[in-house]
Length: 326
Image: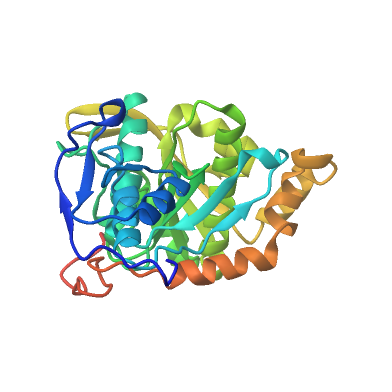
């Protein structure tokens, strides 16, 4: 925030008397014209002391409150290069519970739209795996709006989500000396096909780098709906862990498939599949050669994005009482 702007001393939450498009707001006791202009420049509707934000965008409200209170809201963002510079995609790592809340609400909406089993009555999709201290949720924004999320999970005493149906296969990999990690909660929410395609690819690429450089994993193991299998296998080089099985949760049954990406061999797979392709169809260049140093810096900063309250992280005890099935 500019040093010549004195922030309001108190922020009060209540409904706006004149909501824009039916949206709620929070109101400050004191807000200057300069503050209103600043918030408007950041994409908020701000006038007469009111700052409007959609009810589910907790991260937006958190950011605006910090701005009004004069606190830094600067995030380390990675500007994603695509075939269309106008897409304006930015990649970040969740650094607060409002970030996570917004991401898991998006995941909930996307999973519900696909008819996947519910995890509970709360309208956000989160479980014990997401709360692990080394887990990182990556976010991608299009024109300042969250459009995608993906969580990278370390292997731990809790195991991985794929252990639910493929424990024998994952156990064999562990016993052979492989170091596993998982991806979960991938969700993309946008009506624009180009935005959806590139958001998904950038999330995968950053998560792959985090798995390799930070978790030092040799394999990524995922459990995905059976109708998504060919996307993972044909586009991003995953292979089957075994035949399709049925995942049951909350009385619902959904066909699922376990998949594995061997990170030692993945560059060779991408080169064989895409090495001769032209332009942005060359995913070998995209995943293996492009933006290497910038991504190293991004994942290094993502590694330091500890969130208070995560299991094994600051403010939360470790979990020695949990034991993975042998």
